[in-house]
Length: 307
Ligand SMILES: [Fe+2]
Image 1 (cartoon, rainbow, N blue to C red):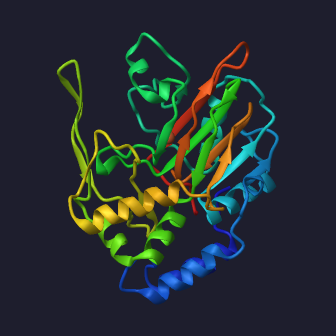
Image 2 (cartoon, protein in one colour):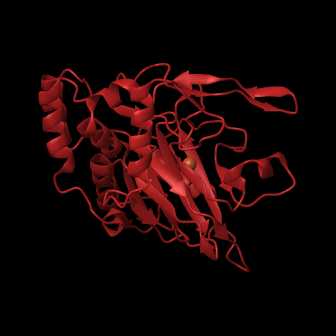
């Protein structure tokens, strides 16, 4: 199903001839890419939602609609007919249709599909994703070794909370544009290989994840932009120079702004987000009765095919 559309091929060839828009010395390519990117860019979350039937077996029209949105915004929300069906293969099969197969094997994901829900009493209770607390803006796996970066993220909702649990979403390419337009030096600073350090994770005296230093923005060999980021202020070390500090401040202010590019959505049963690991946060929530929040999270080393 993942064939290149004619438009995508034409855009690819044009981009290839012009050079990388993410090269700070190539303003012509950047301006052309920027103009194309922002033209007809969706301005409200409703435009991101595609109604589908079975997420595990998309029709060509459903696939093409989701794919076209991801090409534009790096994300799409599907609204399927599986309701509260807790079958974990539903989102996994959806991902496979976009050639997403290499799941990240993180500590909470027994089969590559992590159940995000309130858990107490186990080690998970010490991690914010397994509580009902808010989570600040981030991209997934920013603490992963650089060779295991998360390029695609899929969230599938089995059950929403009774109240809260909203995600804010921002295309990381829009964050890049905001920063480059504000001051190209910010991009240079955030592309430095030593700009952001996440200290080692030590539990009960044992190191379970080593320190990770790397850039915020990087360009993969396929030419696509990748972002590592967290708005957390503890357990993170930013490079101590004025330009980096100003860039981080500008990005933080943008994420807290009322930009029309920031979408807010509370996934309902049977709905999910498929994305090239865009920036996101989560509001706090309250579970009650039948409304205990359960989301499946799938992290991939691959980007969504042909996007
Ligand atoms: Fe996340």
